Every structure is written in structure tokens, then in C-alpha cells.
Image 1: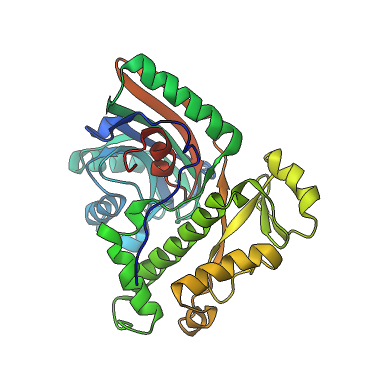
Image 2: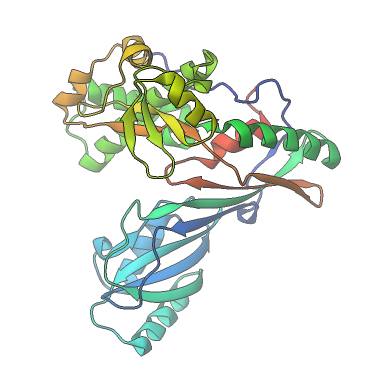
Length: 350
């Protein structure tokens, strides 16, 4: 199977600034925005940590060692990169504890982990994947191809376009592995091969392939200018509530789309996925046909599928200068990739 990882730009007519990311972890700052706050009571201690050079899984494992408990007793809402300065919350199942015990717990962690603990508070339930609104990013782009003034000028023009039109909710390249190797492995599993591997790894590789097909759908939609339209048969999503509905009157829904009330959704293919119909459905069928697979193959592996928000809105996107570097700040909902926004500014793969 030929893998095409190339993605079109939303701002293809606007020149990029080039540059580099992550010269230091402090150049890529990620702050997790919680879905809810701990209420101060319960058996789980929520600990908000700022870290560098450690993955979320590594922190989970180290906390399990410190408290002599299984990894499953340590909860988190989302996975964070090690090559960044990230702030996120973990939960630790402690049982019945008082405030003195909380202070002792914080001291234990500080004595064993090179992290900053911002706060610790009890809550009644474990923190689980998905228990977050999203992430706020503060990212420095260094070594741009232009002088600072010109870089800011270009970036401001790109930012205005993105604030008005959003950006396709592509999966970032980190999902696919080096040269798309995770996609190739996922294809083999869909084809009925390598089914005996670790279940977690199998799910991950399948999700990589699903993400790849989603990217191809979004790329085709953007390149055909259907990104700017709501189509008959689209499965649309309300930004305010997350509710899904099938589009029966595209002319009526187009106004809501332009007013940033709704978005089309893209397919995460699976046997239980809500299929688009009509013109929108044909776009999805084209992706499956190009890939040479059917929904029945997903059904055989009990892969349910879902719908993914097609257009990311970034109304708070802001660009500025910090010394001679470009500073880009924005919020993204959970599951979205910051690199998809940054590539519009940098355009290093042109």
C-alpha cells in the first residue's frame, strides 16, 4: 500500500516563516485544561504537576513505584510529550486520608521526582483519559527565515485567516510513526494479519490507520473546496453541545457553519460509525475505495469507529514577538494536535 502523508495547507497562498521548534522544552509549553475541578473529598488525590523530559506514562510508572501500587491506580486525562514543558493532573488512589497525609504525599513525590507540584486536592473518582477540555499551548518558533518584524507580519496574516476559517482537524504526524510505519502495520491488522500481538498495541496501530484515513478525507475535502461547505448528508456537530445530526437542508446549515455554530465531521471508520449519505457519503466512499478496504473488515475486528470534528476553531489564536522569536499561543480541544496549527505558520515541508 502506498502511504501519502502529505497534507494541504489552509493558508497555501500565504508564505510561511520557516523556523524550528523545541530547541528547549521551555519553547513548547502545554497546559492541560481540566473538565472539572476536584471537590476536596474522596479517596483519590489529584496532583497537578509541571514536568520536562518525562512522558505521562513514565510519571505514572514512577508514581506507582513511590506509592507501591499498580499502575492502574494512577490516573491521568491525556498523554503529554516529553520534549516539552507540560502541566497536567494525575490522580493517586490513597483511600482514607487527611490533610496531613496530603502534605506527606506531596513531600514524597518531591523527594523522588524532578517535577514541580502546583497543587494537590482530593476527589471522589479516578482521573481517566478524556477527562479534560483541551490544552493551552504557548510555543516559541526560533530561527525563522525572516527578520523578526517580517516574521510577525506574515504570522499575523496567517493567524487572521485561521481565526476566520479554522483549520482541518488533521491527526499530527506523531500518530503515524517514522515514515508512516504505524499505518502499514495497522493495514496488515485490518487485512487479518498479525492479530496475535499485544491488544493495546493492536488497538493503537488500528487507530493510527483510522487516523490516516481521516487525514486523507480531510485533505480531499480541503483540496476540493468542500471544506468551506456543508454538504447534503453530512454528519454535523454542534460546537456548543457536541450534538450530532444529519444535514438535510445544506443551505440552511451553511449559515450556521459560517457563523461557527456547527462543523462537518470526518469519519473514523468502523462498523458502528454513523455514515454520511448523499454527496457527503460519496466523499467517504472514495476514501475506502482508494484504500481498498470495506467497513466489513472493521466489523470482523469489532472496531466500532466514530465521528471526529472536521474543523477546529481557534478564535483565541495570538502571535507576538519575544525578543527575535515568534510566539504562538492558542487553545485546542482534546484530541487535536498543535503541530497542525504550527505547520500553517512555518510551512517547512513545502
